[in-house]
Length: 597
Image (tube, rainbow, N blue to C red; front, side):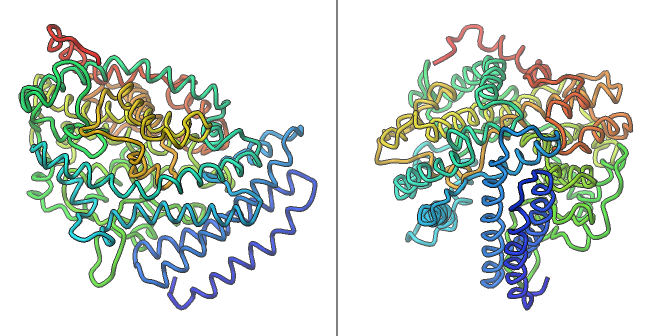
């Protein structure tokens, strides 16, 4: 797309949206779905192209066309979703009824019909996002640090005063958006009720092919399964941090939230050297291995592509290599945040944008992003509204499950490692992985329960911060490192909250990835412990994965789940099996300690 096409694209978007509007006025649900789907596909492809262009060549004009294309597509989605709601209660063919439901559930923050209220909502959302972006880029405060700088401090420093300073600095800008956030909630709930949902939280939970109440019950059930492992991890980490920091960490009770290695204490792997067995040192330095073998960013992507090829998936289309941004280009401003793009999967137009570096983190991230890409290609033959993950967690879980197959044995198979460590050396590696994965679940339930409570009205604006910290105390076992009150709005500087991104998908994905991994290992005939299994080279595992992915969203997620795992429910038994050796070790370590808080 050339920058000179910008006005033409905007005009075409307007033409498409206005021309197709008349098609949706009939009473026949199937005709409505057919025409709405055509419109959504056109608008989706054009807005994705515009956004990809802006991500990979950020100019003032590209930002303008991207913003305008997104606005038009978003507004039309809302209008069509509300029209789809009028068919509720009718007896319809299953596929038509499902598509009507998906159209409504695709709206994250629904605008109400009232034009003035809709305008205020749009302006408020922009205010929330701008507040986060400004803080991230640090353009409005003298001598302040960027998000990357502050997050690096949290990962690398062990000085409690330095950590406290970074922790407080990042949260300070949220005070300005406390009132706007409450206003956004009120207006978005008006839009949700027009779509026949009680509130926005109920809308978000309904995407799981069950009632909002049933999903909440399943969510809590999974947390109840994994909570004992989290509490054991918390108990051990608290004891080790007390040994290092002294009395600022209590012998019993809550851990100060700024000492766990990240801004939100959702990933403790960076403090593994302080708290893990044998220091939880890495057995393998993958960054050094990649550098020693001279791996380029494109080599990393080729390696990940070969993984999928080995289990029976096709090579990536040539257009992927021609149109993706895999390295940071010179001479233009780009957004390096890793992302996978489904521009037009039926035309095999799938892309990736990322400034890949030859290091361990990016090696795993590329695995994850190609999981998205191969999911897009797997369901490409579905009709447009069915070209999506079986549920919001499936997409994230697919790439993460493949990442679990990056074992020492796999690294040997692809020539990066001469000889893998023995099984006796597994515990430090597995413990570090537990520090990464298990706290994410505790953080997710805090974010979700807080936000669902805010949308339902159970948590009032005057209690935003109190409720946030009550949940962190109850579920994460954390305390603020300094007194907080209702002049603060700590949740407001969490990206997914300020940008209205549903977070339940990450909780679900963190559970599902281990279910997927276990099932694929069984299909591959692996007899190794689950944490040592790699499905690399197994066509049987690949066939089982493909059968689930090709369904897209055409069937309820438990149908896809059954094809992949043989079960129709989610539970945490697989993640507990994966980390079984860690649980046994923690039980011995904690025998003389008083755990809990």
